[in-house]
Length: 458
Image 1 (cartoon, rainbow, N blue to C red):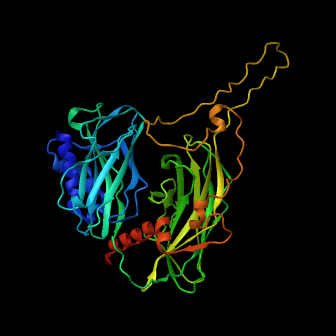
Image 2 (cartoon, rainbow, N blue to C red; image 1 turned 90 degrees about the vertical axis):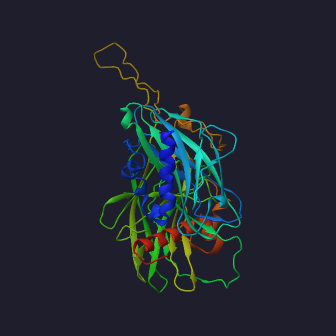
C-alpha cells in the first residue's frame, strides 16, 4: 500500500499548492516525494503521461467533457503502473470535490466506471483502477479515456488538470524501484452556469496570419521540412499576439507521431506543446512560445510583420493519411474589448509511408548465375498499442498492404472547418463563443498564466 500512500501524498501537495501546482509542475519532483515517503528513493520514471484533448473551458452545469490520458513505457523492458490518479488542482476559485464527477474507461475497456474519490479540502482527487496493476511492455502505450462533469454550483475560475502514476521498475534494487510519472498540468477555465447580461464588448484588433511554403507531402520517418508563419499588423495599433497551429484531420492525429518545431528568438529550435479542445477532439493543437522571455505571446507593432520559422516531420509510426493545417493568431484584448482569433487559409497535405525497394535483377557481364532479387518486404516499426474501444473512419493505407504509394487528391472541404476559416482565400476573424471553441480559451488562459509569472496578477 506504500505506493498508494505516496500517490495520495503527492496529490495533496498539488491540491494544497494551488497556483503553484499549475505554474511550477516541479512540485512533484523526486525531492518532494522523498520527503513524503521516508525510506524510499523515488526515481525518474520511464513512463511518460500526456493528457490529450483536455478542455480549455468547461461550463458549470454543462455536459460532460471527454479527453484522454496516454501512458507510454519508454524503457527497453516491462514496467508496472501500480496506481494512477486524476487531479483537479484549485488555483483560488474555491472548488471542492463535490463540484466534480470523474468517470473513466480502462485501456481496452468498453464500460465507463466511476473513479474512486479520495477526499480533498480544495480541488479534487480520484484514484484510477485502484485494484488493478497495469503491465506495460517495452515501448507499449496504454490509453485511459476520461469524462469530467462540473456541477452547476461550482464557482467560476481557473483550475488545473493532471494525471499521475506510481511506477515500479522490477530491474532496479527494491529501494530504488518506485518511480513517479505525471502529465503536464493543463489550465481549464470553469465558466459560470448563468452568464451575466452585459453589453457585448468590442472585438479587439487582430493581426493577419498566413502559412507560407507548406509542403504538399511528408514521408513518415522522413526528414523535417520547413515552412513559415507570417503575421502582419494592419490594425493601426500595437498588438500582443499569441500563435498556434491546428491539425484539422477527420480522425485523431496521434501527438506522438508529430515532430513540430519552431525557431525561438535566440535561433534555437524548440518543440511545440500539445493543446486540446473538447469541441474538436479529433484536432491536434500545437502551442508556440515565441516571446522574448519564452512567453506565449510576442509584440507586433502597428504596421509590422513577424515571421516564425517552423519545421515539421512525422515518425515512421505515422500512418498514411490526408491532413490539413491552419495557423491562428490570438490578439489579446484591451479595456472594454474581447479577445479575437484570426485564422489563416487552410493548407492540405498528405502523409505517405516510405515505399519498399523495388525488385531488380541485373545479370553480370561475365557471370551466368542469376542475381538474387532485392526483398520487397516492407518493414514497419512502431510501438504496439493496448486496444481501446474507439471507432475510426480511416481506410487502410496503400502502404499497409504493400501497394505502391500514390499521393492522394486533396480532400473535399469539411463543413466543420467553416468556423476556422478553413478553405477560404482570406483570413477570417473569429470572436465570441466560436473563438472559445477554436482555442481562444487556451490562448487567454496561457496569457494570464504569463502575467502571473511576471507578477502582474490575474
